[in-house]
Amino acid sequence: MSEQQLTVVLTKAGRVKIRYPAARVADDGDRISVRAPWAAGAARDFGFVRFEPGDVFVEHFWRTRWYAVKEVRTGDGVLKGWYCDVTRPALVRGGEILVDDLDLDLWVSADGTSVLRLDEDEFAASGLAVSDPEAAAQAVRALDALDDQARTPAGLPALLR
Image 1: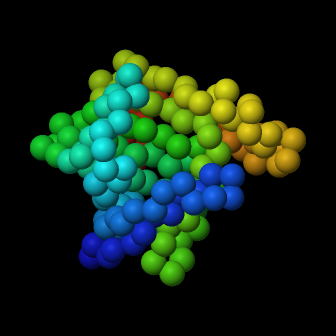
Image 2 (image 1 turned 90 degrees about the vertical axis):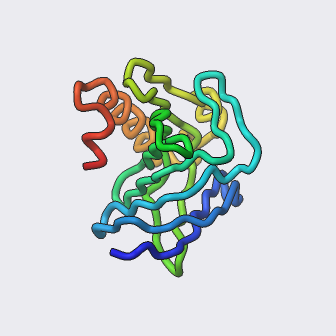
């Protein structure tokens, strides 16, 4: 499959959080994978990882799963780790990948020894459990599934084969 240019559109609470160009590298009908440079421009230090200009993300979005997995590498190919967003299933249409962020995230270091659940406080404060209890339950199940998979010997790469 040739590398087609797409735009990833990440929304949160009904508003566009960020949009950025990406090159499609694979699409099996359920999972679509794209390659994109770090889209935020300036470096961002999270304490456990630093994303910076030159970093390359290979991002995997599913049409049937409630998460996205982003493999993060330096510009010269050194694996930093995996950043996972809990999202509604992706919609792919009109040259765009539409993804609705549900606040929960997971970081897994390159060596798999650090697995961090992130933004659970933001998720609780979002009110999703009241406004859309089924989506909230799906989000929690997705985070638990990612966390469980990350802690297996095969780790997250098993999801991406």
